Structure formats: C-alpha cells, structure tokens
Image 1 (tube, rainbow, N blue to C red):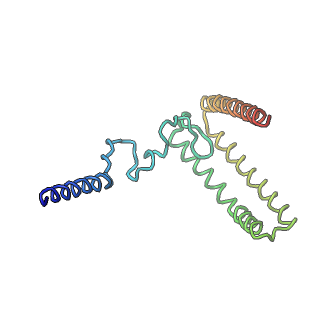
Image 2: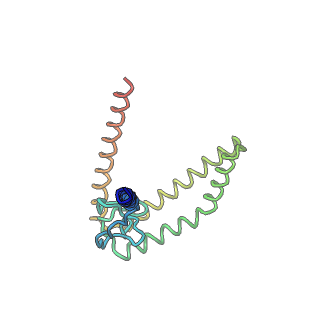
Length: 171
C-alpha cells in the first residue's frame, strides 16, 4: 500500500512539474542576420519598410529615382533651410493660434490671421518647389513630370474606387 501511494505521489509530482515546465516562456530563436535591419529592430536601416520601392520621395517630394547629384542635394538643402528660416515667425504664430483654438479662445480675427499665415506658408512651399525644380536638369524635370503624372492618375483611381465603395456601402 505504501509503495502504491509513493508511486502515485511521484507520478503526480512528475506530471505537475512537466506541466509547469511546459508553461514557462520559451526564448525565441535569434533572427537570421539581416543586413538591412536596424539594431533596434524597427524596420530597415534606411528607414524604409520592407517592400517599399526606390521611387519614394525624399523630403519635399523629389523621388529618389531622379538621382540628384551631391551638388543638387546641397543646393536643395540650402533652399529649404533658407525658406524655413524665413517662415519661422509665421509658423510660431500659427502654432500659438492653434493653441488658442484648443483652449477655446479663438476669435474671428484669429481665424482670419490663421488663414493668412497658412496661405503665406503655402506660398513659401510653392517657392521651395519652384526653386528646387530650377536646379534639376531637363532630363530630371521630364522624369519628374512622368512620375507626377503617374502619381496623379493613381490618386484619381483611388479616389474613384473610394467613392464607388462609399456609394456601394451606403445602399
């Protein structure tokens, strides 16, 4: 009888310890060496998500496939920096007006001023685009036009599908 009890108790201990061991978190296998992965595990070193193409625009919308020279990149940076410095006061004032809107103290005069500031900033952005387009070669300009035409067509197609889906879902 004692032998049978010890056998049952040892069987139960073995079963419970096996269950407890199986429930402990397992350490995952280290990932395969990926030369494009960032050390913090957040996507690729170049900032692109997997599957992104090289026609992704850089800042201020110039696609990478234009293959800007280093001199063109420096000129572009100088143009952008100059415009950003010249619009610092407008951006700060617009930020203060946004805070007033959030706080609920936004007046009609504030709204008119915000619209004027927004228009000034849009004009500055257009100026950046025009100046940056001025540093492109004729081949780069024609390639940019082709890319923008494709982008607009894709955008219109997406808008059309979105409208059709909204109409279909509202029925």
